[in-house]
Length: 150
Image 1 (tube, rainbow, N blue to C red):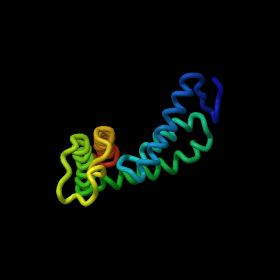
Image 2: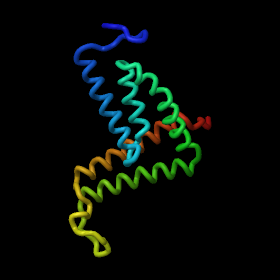
Image 3: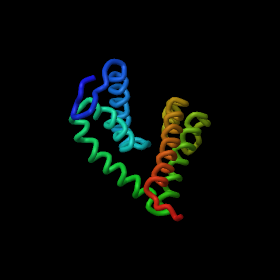
Image 4: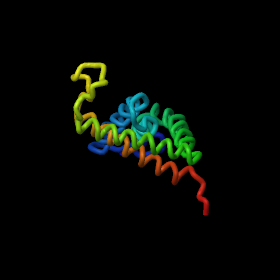
């Protein structure tokens, strides 16, 4: 194995898997910055994988990681923040289930029927996954950043 910045660089299948997964997580993280989901945390995970191969990823990793951890710590700073965070995750889960079940369009809906919950379970399952990931990251943040009362 070759060394890169004092570390061993993976070869072959491990390298390809790391690159594909890293780039996938970076793209998901960028999308999740504006869509529902843990964008900064996905970016950190993707950059961590890419940092094994690229110098630029190592340079970007620390500032993104610092911002992600600061946001995570802020999200669990108070019981109110924790409740709001879990409330947001619960809303994502509920919307995902609603989207997947495709209830009939209500009378108050101002647009045509084709604009009522388009996508079905493909959209619903991504919302459910985002809600579950958000809840898992909230639990992680509570364990990592909240002081232990004991």
